[in-house]
Image (spheres, one colour):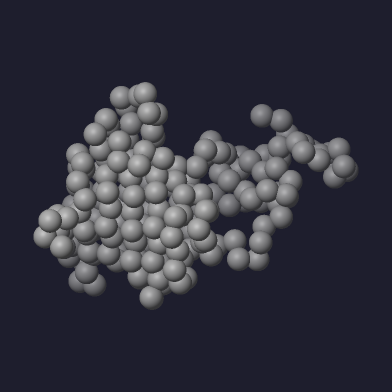
Length: 180
């Protein structure tokens, strides 16, 4: 990786700037280094939805004033935290075909995601901290190791469409798609 340490901005133009775990090209949004490939994309967003990127140290970038507010088309990366406010919801589709719908007042952490369509060591680990979620398991559930963590248990997913609700008292309600 190249470093641009010259204080003359013209000589740094179009060269990657790097600090530890963050790679930035001038004029583009910051993404964590090693995470240059997104793991998914926001396909629906209603209300106040935020995405906290795992590492956000910026040397030089033109970020919009609402950089935390998610919108349709935004990418998500391993280590991101997705949060929804009251009367908000978000739909995210991942590169393996997994699709999550996250309801209001929810928090989901994208802890791990490794997917190679031709690989056999695929894995994902999502932490559902609070709120209600529905999801359709994608290729990782069939060809690797998909886990969903809740405050009371970690589920190993092999291909299903559950609805998960984390209640205020910390208990978890799980329903298969045919019971909804």
